[in-house]
Length: 146
Image (tube, rainbow, N blue to C red; front, top):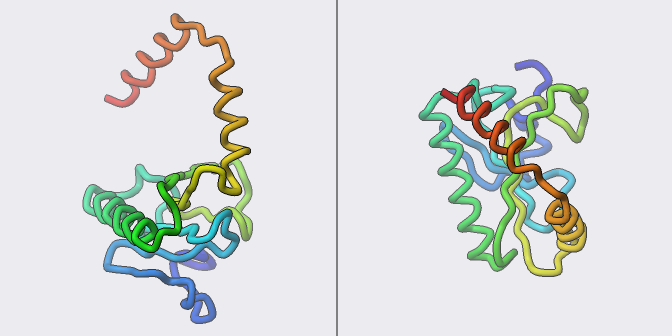
């Protein structure tokens, strides 16, 4: 798959591999936000989740759970954040790879991301949501999801 950083982890990068199976790969992030920041990647190249089959999606989620259990067992966090970004509008770069992957970040109260996350979440809570608009959007998304 050409130059995709995840399709073939270079020999020089194998030290970051946590585990892998026939469907998924778990590697430590090259630029971690916190210690233990993992990336869980499907083995088959896909740019968004909708391109993956049911077996691949299940394998990916099983890998997420396996990595989460390991991070918690090692006491790298008291919980985790799970993130997945699909941003085709951004150019691919060393920090943005056009291959589906999940970020699994061990978290603790007061960690390096806590203050930033708390400010963001509090600002969201202060927003005044229009129930009618939210209801209309929920119905539109529900219809599109069928």
